[in-house]
Image 1 (cartoon, rainbow, N blue to C red):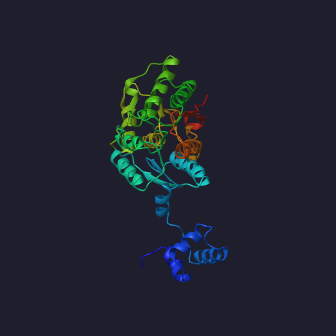
Image 2: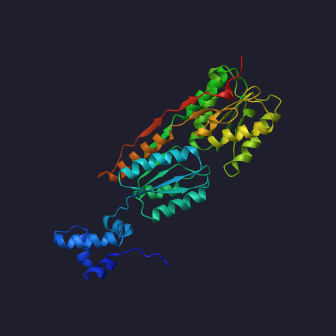
Image 3: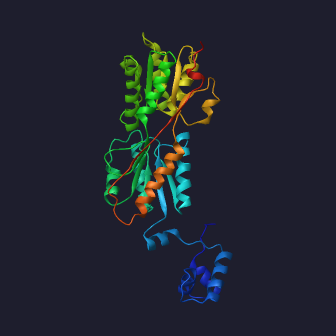
Amino acid sequence: MKFEAVTIKDIARELGLSTSTVSRALRDSYEISNETKKVVLECAERLDYRPNPIALSLKEKRSRSIGVIVCEINNSFFSQAINGIESIAYSKGYNVIISQSHESYIREVSDLNYLASRSIDGLLISVSAETNSMEHLQKLHTRGLPIVFFDRINEELNTHKVIIDNFKAAYKATEHLVQQGFRQIACVVNSAHLSIAQDRIEGYKKALADNGLQVNPEHLHCCSPAADLHLEVEKGVNKFLELQQKPDAIVGLSDKITVGALKVLQTKKIRIPEEMGLVGFSNSDLTELLNPSLTIIRQPAFEMGEVATDLLLQLIESKRPTKDFNRQVLETELIIRDSTRRKS
Protein backbone atom coordinates (compact mmCIF):
# COMPACT_ATOMS: atom_id res chain seq x y z
CA MET A 1 0.00 0.00 0.00
CA LYS A 2 1.36 3.43 -0.95
CA PHE A 3 1.77 5.84 1.95
CA GLU A 4 -0.34 8.97 1.67
CA ALA A 5 0.09 11.84 4.09
CA VAL A 6 -2.93 13.37 5.77
CA THR A 7 -3.96 16.64 4.10
CA ILE A 8 -6.17 19.61 4.92
CA LYS A 9 -8.81 18.05 2.67
CA ASP A 10 -8.92 14.96 4.92
CA ILE A 11 -9.52 17.11 8.00
CA ALA A 12 -12.20 19.11 6.17
CA ARG A 13 -13.94 15.92 5.04
CA GLU A 14 -13.79 14.47 8.59
CA LEU A 15 -15.33 17.60 10.14
CA GLY A 16 -17.67 18.63 7.32
CA LEU A 17 -15.91 21.98 6.94
CA SER A 18 -14.47 23.76 3.93
CA THR A 19 -10.74 23.44 3.25
CA SER A 20 -10.34 27.23 3.53
CA THR A 21 -11.89 27.17 7.03
CA VAL A 22 -9.55 24.36 8.12
CA SER A 23 -6.55 26.15 6.60
CA ARG A 24 -7.36 29.41 8.41
CA ALA A 25 -7.97 27.55 11.69
CA LEU A 26 -4.57 25.86 11.45
CA ARG A 27 -2.98 29.27 10.85
CA ASP A 28 -4.74 30.63 13.95
CA SER A 29 -6.58 33.24 11.87
CA TYR A 30 -8.72 35.81 13.69
CA GLU A 31 -11.52 35.02 11.21
CA ILE A 32 -12.12 31.62 12.83
CA SER A 33 -13.75 31.16 16.24
CA ASN A 34 -11.78 29.63 19.10
CA GLU A 35 -14.27 26.77 19.28
CA THR A 36 -13.73 25.86 15.60
CA LYS A 37 -9.95 26.18 15.99
CA LYS A 38 -10.03 23.75 18.92
CA VAL A 39 -12.09 21.19 16.95
CA VAL A 40 -9.77 21.45 13.93
CA LEU A 41 -6.58 21.14 16.01
CA GLU A 42 -7.93 18.10 17.87
CA CYS A 43 -8.83 16.43 14.57
CA ALA A 44 -5.42 17.28 13.08
CA GLU A 45 -3.70 15.66 16.06
CA ARG A 46 -5.93 12.61 15.93
CA LEU A 47 -5.23 12.08 12.21
CA ASP A 48 -1.48 12.82 12.70
CA TYR A 49 -1.59 15.73 10.27
CA ARG A 50 1.74 17.35 9.40
CA PRO A 51 2.06 20.55 7.32
CA ASN A 52 3.47 19.98 3.83
CA PRO A 53 7.03 21.40 3.94
CA ILE A 54 7.10 21.88 0.16
CA ALA A 55 3.90 23.91 0.22
CA LEU A 56 5.20 25.95 3.15
CA SER A 57 8.52 26.61 1.42
CA LEU A 58 6.70 27.84 -1.71
CA LYS A 59 4.62 30.18 0.39
CA GLU A 60 7.42 31.46 2.64
CA LYS A 61 10.14 31.18 -0.05
CA ARG A 62 12.24 29.31 2.52
CA SER A 63 12.57 25.59 3.13
CA ARG A 64 14.16 25.83 6.61
CA SER A 65 16.73 23.30 5.42
CA ILE A 66 20.45 23.45 4.67
CA GLY A 67 22.52 21.14 2.49
CA VAL A 68 25.83 19.59 3.50
CA ILE A 69 28.30 17.98 1.08
CA VAL A 70 31.30 16.04 2.43
CA CYS A 71 33.55 13.40 0.90
CA GLU A 72 32.18 10.68 3.17
CA ILE A 73 30.27 10.28 6.41
CA ASN A 74 32.24 7.15 7.37
CA ASN A 75 35.11 9.32 8.56
CA SER A 76 35.62 10.32 12.17
CA PHE A 77 36.42 13.93 11.29
CA PHE A 78 33.37 14.50 9.08
CA SER A 79 30.98 12.58 11.34
CA GLN A 80 32.03 14.82 14.23
CA ALA A 81 31.73 17.94 12.05
CA ILE A 82 28.21 16.88 11.02
CA ASN A 83 27.28 16.47 14.69
CA GLY A 84 28.39 20.06 15.21
CA ILE A 85 26.41 21.21 12.18
CA GLU A 86 23.23 19.48 13.34
CA SER A 87 23.55 20.76 16.91
CA ILE A 88 23.33 24.36 15.68
CA ALA A 89 20.94 23.83 12.76
CA TYR A 90 18.25 21.96 14.70
CA SER A 91 18.43 24.37 17.62
CA LYS A 92 17.59 27.17 15.15
CA GLY A 93 14.76 25.25 13.49
CA TYR A 94 16.59 24.05 10.37
CA ASN A 95 16.74 20.55 8.93
CA VAL A 96 19.98 19.15 7.49
CA ILE A 97 20.27 17.21 4.21
CA ILE A 98 23.61 15.39 3.92
CA SER A 99 25.25 14.18 0.69
CA GLN A 100 28.53 12.34 0.08
CA SER A 101 30.78 13.06 -2.90
CA HIS A 102 32.98 9.99 -2.29
CA GLU A 103 35.89 12.15 -3.49
CA SER A 104 34.30 12.44 -6.95
CA TYR A 105 33.87 15.78 -8.73
CA ILE A 106 31.04 14.38 -10.86
CA ARG A 107 29.26 13.08 -7.76
CA GLU A 108 29.75 16.44 -6.04
CA VAL A 109 28.13 18.28 -8.96
CA SER A 110 25.24 15.78 -8.94
CA ASP A 111 24.76 16.19 -5.18
CA LEU A 112 24.75 19.96 -5.52
CA ASN A 113 22.17 19.90 -8.29
CA TYR A 114 19.92 17.64 -6.21
CA LEU A 115 20.18 19.86 -3.13
CA ALA A 116 19.53 23.00 -5.17
CA SER A 117 16.40 21.38 -6.64
CA ARG A 118 15.16 20.81 -3.09
CA SER A 119 15.28 24.60 -2.53
CA ILE A 120 17.77 24.49 0.33
CA ASP A 121 18.31 27.83 2.08
CA GLY A 122 22.09 27.45 2.14
CA LEU A 123 25.02 25.07 1.64
CA LEU A 124 27.96 23.85 3.73
CA ILE A 125 30.62 22.12 1.65
CA SER A 126 34.02 20.47 1.98
CA VAL A 127 35.11 19.87 -1.61
CA SER A 128 36.11 16.47 -3.00
CA ALA A 129 39.67 15.39 -3.76
CA GLU A 130 38.93 15.59 -7.49
CA THR A 131 37.41 19.08 -7.43
CA ASN A 132 39.56 21.65 -9.20
CA SER A 133 36.77 23.72 -10.81
CA MET A 134 34.33 25.93 -8.93
CA GLU A 135 31.95 26.56 -11.83
CA HIS A 136 29.13 24.49 -10.32
CA LEU A 137 29.33 26.40 -7.04
CA GLN A 138 29.98 29.78 -8.63
CA LYS A 139 26.73 29.61 -10.63
CA LEU A 140 24.59 29.07 -7.54
CA HIS A 141 26.61 31.57 -5.50
CA THR A 142 26.05 34.23 -8.18
CA ARG A 143 22.31 33.49 -8.07
CA GLY A 144 22.31 34.20 -4.34
CA LEU A 145 22.66 30.79 -2.67
CA PRO A 146 24.50 31.26 0.66
CA ILE A 147 27.57 28.98 0.71
CA VAL A 148 30.13 28.38 3.46
CA PHE A 149 33.27 26.28 2.99
CA PHE A 150 34.71 24.23 5.82
CA ASP A 151 37.90 22.13 6.06
CA ARG A 152 38.59 21.84 2.31
CA ILE A 153 38.05 25.31 0.92
CA ASN A 154 38.50 27.23 -2.31
CA GLU A 155 39.66 30.82 -2.63
CA GLU A 156 37.71 31.60 -5.82
CA LEU A 157 34.40 32.18 -4.04
CA ASN A 158 34.17 35.20 -1.78
CA THR A 159 32.34 33.76 1.21
CA HIS A 160 32.89 32.53 4.78
CA LYS A 161 35.52 29.81 5.27
CA VAL A 162 36.27 27.71 8.36
CA ILE A 163 39.56 25.80 8.53
CA ILE A 164 42.22 24.63 10.91
CA ASP A 165 45.76 26.03 10.88
CA ASN A 166 46.95 23.29 8.51
CA PHE A 167 50.45 24.71 8.15
CA LYS A 168 50.97 24.87 11.90
CA ALA A 169 49.47 21.41 12.47
CA ALA A 170 51.82 19.71 10.01
CA TYR A 171 54.74 21.75 11.32
CA LYS A 172 53.93 20.63 14.86
CA ALA A 173 53.71 16.95 13.86
CA THR A 174 57.01 17.04 11.93
CA GLU A 175 58.88 18.97 14.61
CA HIS A 176 57.73 16.44 17.21
CA LEU A 177 59.40 13.66 15.18
CA VAL A 178 62.61 15.69 15.00
CA GLN A 179 62.54 16.17 18.77
CA GLN A 180 62.21 12.40 19.17
CA GLY A 181 65.42 11.87 17.22
CA PHE A 182 64.05 11.06 13.76
CA ARG A 183 66.02 12.58 10.90
CA GLN A 184 64.80 11.06 7.61
CA ILE A 185 61.14 12.06 7.76
CA ALA A 186 58.82 11.16 4.90
CA CYS A 187 55.35 12.48 4.16
CA VAL A 188 52.23 10.99 2.53
CA VAL A 189 49.54 13.42 1.44
CA ASN A 190 46.15 13.27 -0.27
CA SER A 191 45.46 15.14 -3.53
CA ALA A 192 48.18 17.78 -3.72
CA HIS A 193 45.94 20.40 -5.35
CA LEU A 194 43.69 20.64 -2.28
CA SER A 195 44.32 23.77 -0.22
CA ILE A 196 44.69 21.79 3.01
CA ALA A 197 47.24 19.46 1.38
CA GLN A 198 49.32 22.37 0.09
CA ASP A 199 49.36 24.07 3.50
CA ARG A 200 50.28 20.82 5.27
CA ILE A 201 53.11 20.07 2.84
CA GLU A 202 54.51 23.56 3.43
CA GLY A 203 54.30 23.07 7.20
CA TYR A 204 56.14 19.75 6.90
CA LYS A 205 58.90 21.27 4.75
CA LYS A 206 59.32 24.33 6.98
CA ALA A 207 59.67 22.20 10.11
CA LEU A 208 62.48 20.22 8.47
CA ALA A 209 64.23 23.38 7.27
CA ASP A 210 63.95 25.11 10.65
CA ASN A 211 65.60 22.10 12.27
CA GLY A 212 68.50 21.98 9.81
CA LEU A 213 67.17 19.01 7.81
CA GLN A 214 66.98 18.84 4.04
CA VAL A 215 63.76 18.02 2.22
CA ASN A 216 64.26 14.85 0.19
CA PRO A 217 61.86 14.91 -2.81
CA GLU A 218 61.81 11.09 -2.73
CA HIS A 219 60.33 11.28 0.77
CA LEU A 220 57.15 13.02 -0.38
CA HIS A 221 54.34 10.92 -1.86
CA CYS A 222 51.17 12.58 -3.20
CA CYS A 223 48.22 10.24 -3.71
CA SER A 224 46.30 10.38 -6.97
CA PRO A 225 42.71 11.62 -6.38
CA ALA A 226 41.33 9.23 -9.00
CA ALA A 227 42.92 6.10 -7.49
CA ASP A 228 42.00 3.92 -4.50
CA LEU A 229 43.47 5.71 -1.48
CA HIS A 230 44.45 2.49 0.32
CA LEU A 231 46.41 1.32 -2.72
CA GLU A 232 47.99 4.75 -3.10
CA VAL A 233 49.18 4.74 0.53
CA GLU A 234 50.52 1.21 0.13
CA LYS A 235 52.31 2.28 -3.03
CA GLY A 236 53.88 5.27 -1.26
CA VAL A 237 55.05 3.39 1.82
CA ASN A 238 56.49 0.56 -0.30
CA LYS A 239 58.34 3.16 -2.38
CA PHE A 240 59.88 4.59 0.80
CA LEU A 241 61.01 1.16 1.97
CA GLU A 242 62.73 0.45 -1.35
CA LEU A 243 64.81 3.64 -1.30
CA GLN A 244 68.52 3.50 -0.64
CA GLN A 245 68.05 6.33 1.85
CA LYS A 246 65.01 4.96 3.67
CA PRO A 247 63.01 7.28 5.91
CA ASP A 248 62.93 6.57 9.63
CA ALA A 249 59.55 8.24 10.18
CA ILE A 250 56.36 9.07 8.28
CA VAL A 251 53.89 11.93 8.63
CA GLY A 252 50.40 10.98 7.37
CA LEU A 253 48.52 14.10 6.37
CA SER A 254 44.99 12.66 6.67
CA ASP A 255 43.11 10.12 8.77
CA LYS A 256 42.96 7.25 6.27
CA ILE A 257 46.53 7.84 5.17
CA THR A 258 47.82 7.54 8.73
CA VAL A 259 45.95 4.32 9.51
CA GLY A 260 46.76 2.95 6.05
CA ALA A 261 50.47 3.57 6.58
CA LEU A 262 50.31 1.77 9.92
CA LYS A 263 48.68 -1.24 8.27
CA VAL A 264 51.35 -1.45 5.55
CA LEU A 265 54.21 -1.14 8.04
CA GLN A 266 52.74 -3.85 10.26
CA THR A 267 52.25 -6.13 7.24
CA LYS A 268 55.92 -5.60 6.39
CA LYS A 269 56.80 -6.34 10.03
CA ILE A 270 58.43 -2.92 10.43
CA ARG A 271 58.75 -2.20 14.16
CA ILE A 272 57.08 1.06 15.22
CA PRO A 273 58.64 3.32 16.43
CA GLU A 274 62.01 1.52 16.66
CA GLU A 275 62.43 1.25 12.89
CA MET A 276 59.82 3.74 11.74
CA GLY A 277 58.08 6.53 13.63
CA LEU A 278 54.52 7.41 12.62
CA VAL A 279 52.38 10.48 13.28
CA GLY A 280 49.32 11.71 11.46
CA PHE A 281 46.00 13.51 11.39
CA SER A 282 43.09 11.60 12.95
CA ASN A 283 39.98 12.22 15.03
CA SER A 284 39.27 8.56 15.71
CA ASP A 285 39.21 7.40 19.33
CA LEU A 286 40.41 4.00 18.10
CA THR A 287 43.91 5.35 17.47
CA GLU A 288 44.53 5.09 21.21
CA LEU A 289 43.63 1.37 21.15
CA LEU A 290 45.88 0.40 18.24
CA ASN A 291 49.19 -1.36 18.81
CA PRO A 292 51.19 0.76 18.97
CA SER A 293 48.87 3.60 19.92
CA LEU A 294 49.11 6.38 17.35
CA THR A 295 50.48 9.86 17.90
CA ILE A 296 47.98 12.14 16.19
CA ILE A 297 46.98 15.66 15.31
CA ARG A 298 43.38 16.00 16.51
CA GLN A 299 41.23 18.59 14.78
CA PRO A 300 38.32 20.49 16.42
CA ALA A 301 35.80 18.92 14.03
CA PHE A 302 32.67 19.44 16.15
CA GLU A 303 33.57 23.09 16.75
CA MET A 304 34.26 23.54 13.02
CA GLY A 305 30.76 22.28 12.23
CA GLU A 306 29.24 24.63 14.79
CA VAL A 307 31.15 27.70 13.57
CA ALA A 308 30.44 26.98 9.88
CA THR A 309 26.71 26.55 10.56
CA ASP A 310 26.52 29.74 12.61
CA LEU A 311 28.12 31.66 9.74
CA LEU A 312 25.79 30.07 7.17
CA LEU A 313 22.67 30.92 9.17
CA GLN A 314 23.89 34.50 9.48
CA LEU A 315 24.06 34.66 5.66
CA ILE A 316 20.61 33.06 5.29
CA GLU A 317 18.87 35.30 7.82
CA SER A 318 20.66 38.56 7.00
CA LYS A 319 18.28 41.21 5.72
CA ARG A 320 21.05 42.87 3.72
CA PRO A 321 23.65 41.44 1.31
CA THR A 322 26.80 40.39 3.18
CA LYS A 323 29.96 42.06 1.89
CA ASP A 324 32.47 41.23 4.63
CA PHE A 325 33.34 37.56 5.00
CA ASN A 326 35.20 35.75 7.77
CA ARG A 327 38.05 33.27 7.58
CA GLN A 328 37.91 31.35 10.84
CA VAL A 329 41.11 29.46 11.68
CA LEU A 330 40.88 26.89 14.49
CA GLU A 331 43.76 25.32 16.41
CA THR A 332 44.65 21.63 16.59
CA GLU A 333 46.05 19.41 19.37
CA LEU A 334 49.10 17.14 19.19
CA ILE A 335 48.44 13.95 21.20
CA ILE A 336 51.67 12.03 21.80
CA ARG A 337 51.49 8.25 22.04
CA ASP A 338 53.64 5.16 21.46
CA SER A 339 54.10 5.37 17.67
CA THR A 340 56.67 8.17 18.11
CA ARG A 341 58.13 7.36 21.55
CA ARG A 342 61.56 5.87 21.13
CA LYS A 343 62.96 4.09 24.16
CA SER A 344 66.02 5.68 25.75
